[in-house]
Length: 134
Image (cartoon, rainbow, N blue to C red; front, side, top):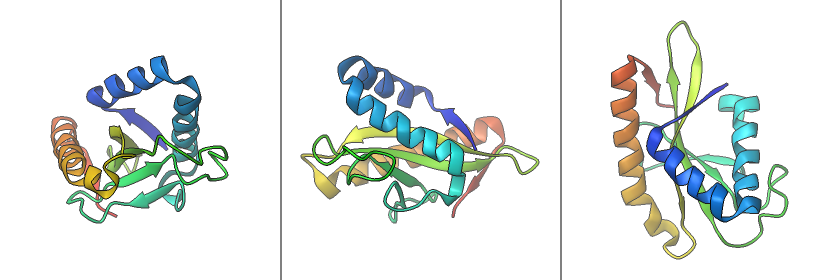
């Protein structure tokens, strides 16, 4: 599956790469798994975000998985992404928001999911992509 990096996500991603190479490596491993497996990537690496209006999913740095075997402690990172049809059945995963939910736990989701939904709606509209809700 093609991976599309939304511009604000790239800013977060570059900050992570510059501050913690090991953790950034875990996130890159998850992105690579998403690219390889597409919509079939499931728990524990990726899970649906129930509160999303756009059918978002979240890549999960913790708990440890086959993809991120050493991710057994903070930071507890999430990468919110959506799936779009770019036309002709060509699907892409759009990486929208990344963040650390270590301190906020579930309270991290409302603001960030709303922002990711907003970003996906705008990006899809600008590119005439159809958002895949599930």
